[in-house]
Length: 363
Ligand SMILES: C[S@@+](CC[C@H](N)C(=O)[O-])C[C@H]1O[C@@H](n2cnc3c(N)ncnc32)[C@H](O)[C@@H]1O
Image 1 (cartoon, protein in one colour):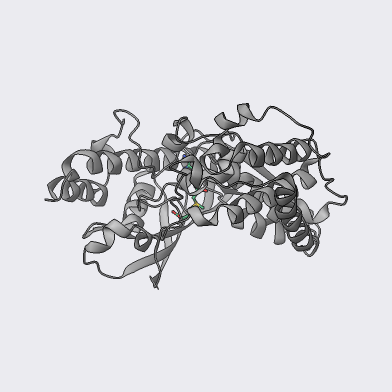
Image 2 (tube, helix red, strand yellow):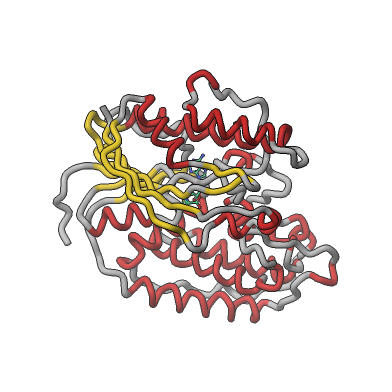
């Protein structure tokens, strides 16, 4: 399809890039922002990699080398030094490729490491364990690593080759929704789903992929603490309670008054931090959207223990406070919500969870 539709589509929490991909299919220019670098690699693969040609060549056979330094590698949480050395050989080769082949190579490496470390996954797929002692590490020689990576390269490139090719440009940016690197009044349409207040930590969910990129979230807290919905508390938040709508305020009050442990301490702080990030995101959307721009949000309500978290209502309030109009709200019942992944929270009786699709228009 030729790139012909006018207007720029934005997703400030782009994740694996469903919005940017859909915009491209429809011929719209689009911008996807995500603070997690892994998300942007995956979004790039889904959008562009079908255009690539060429092979990813296996790294030369390793000579004897000092594997000692790999013990400090972020991948040392799961692999012994020999296996890490070979994964790093592959990473070095992939880093030198042009962007499309790089994307295929990186996603293949992500998949290979995921499948090799499957035994470290628990019942909660967003929480991966680490080896407690040396004997539980994964020991592999270089040819076993090669086999796993090459199998995934084959899989990912054959899938990418099936992608239809579109010409509308996608810009993927590693950035923060509270400080969008986008000029004022640039955006015509926002289509997004903000991270929810479900205590699902996106950085933790991608620990292994981030380790491949050289980020060890257990020692470097910057990425994890910067993500919305994180379970790490940064510092005092700057939430302006007087500007917060009734649904947001009442949620904070109900959490503060909940009789379970740490509700009035840690959990209240976490919810405040989340609302601080959410409202900062709305301020940014208000800044980057053109007048009369449309904003489509997909939002799931959730629960804090047995307290409903009416996120859709909170978002509508925040939009109205910025002079936007609600044009449409459609509600759907959700069968399998993200809240259900949080095993500790299952002890509380909850009602059904609703998902809303909301269309707003900037004033
Ligand atoms: C795909 S979206 C939302 C999906 C769904 N609403 C949920 O909560 O699971 C979530 C994305 O937002 C990203 N994200 C979290 N905090 C962010 C921030 N401060 N700035 C930009 N992106 C962020 C995460 O990395 C993740 O990819």
